[in-house]
Length: 383
Ligand SMILES: O=c1[nH]cnc2c1ncn2[C@@H]1O[C@H](CO)[C@@H](O)[C@H]1O
Ligand SMILES: [Zn+2]
Image (tube, rainbow, N blue to C red; front, side):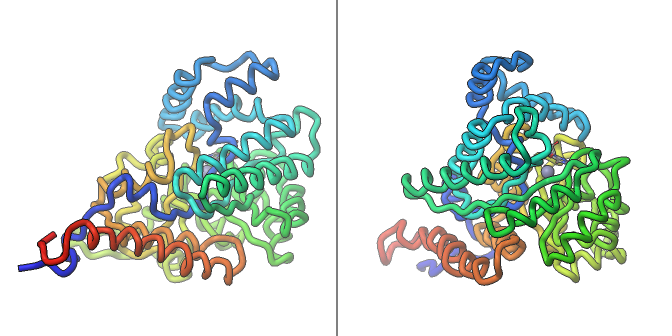
């Protein structure tokens, strides 16, 4: 008896090599959370920054992972002092941005929205505009280097305002000014508890009047009220994390599920959730991969996406995140394609470009991987 196709109920799990080669889309990645450790060490030495906790790149890599693994978002965020410290000149910003794109392309990411807070890069005397232009220049350089290596990637910038500060309107205006110049949207980040998104209502109202796009970090360290405000007061297009929407979902002992009004709204309106599993384990938003709400949210068909958040602090990559999920939830290539298409549908670039990415890049990429088993054995011989 020959097998015509893999039994769907036993579809093979994606291997790590397949996952790396699969086209991936990343919506939530911080530029200042993804530096190469060797670059931090070099930039610090060149700039005379003497406060790095380690000067050996491998020890520094480990220091970031450990320091970020505290169970608290506030402690996690303290580690960014060192990355931001070395990102204060045009050259440093362009270099970090170019390397970011190269690293994402090598990981098989075909489209990414990378965010950073321009207001955190002014200590060397740059203006907000110069910061944005330096990062854009780096992104374009990274795309060219990736193309020269035979890798295709497109990267858009999201400008973040820090929620404890008071510059959100200014940063939103900056995002709007650079809208057709490499910046695709706006975000707020930083410590969540005590800094509700409604503090920055003027920025969100401005962007809505301009028909512009924004996401809001909400429902990570703080729960449903933060998600509710981000959506119903501020009008966010997407939720950065949003993982705590789980607090509004009840699963009974017989397995039946009841959604509260907010969770139902999020699912019905197809609000994208920028989930970042490893980051959530570090900040205490989830106890383990197995208990991470992404399993349930995927089953309930929320618009769930998979993201890295901070590749340095979380010692991760898109391949790493997908690999953890495949091992934990036994996801197949079909599941990974589902997350990827969800992410591409939720990107802030124009609809026709999203559609072309889905139909001409993502689906053919997964189809090629899925069909490999056909060519792994001679005709007439059972696989
Ligand atoms: O998971 C997160 N939650 C909230 N804020 C974050 C997270 N990761 C990074 N940042 C903050 O965003 C700034 C701009 O990139 C970073 O400097 C960090 O303070
Ligand atoms: Zn984040």
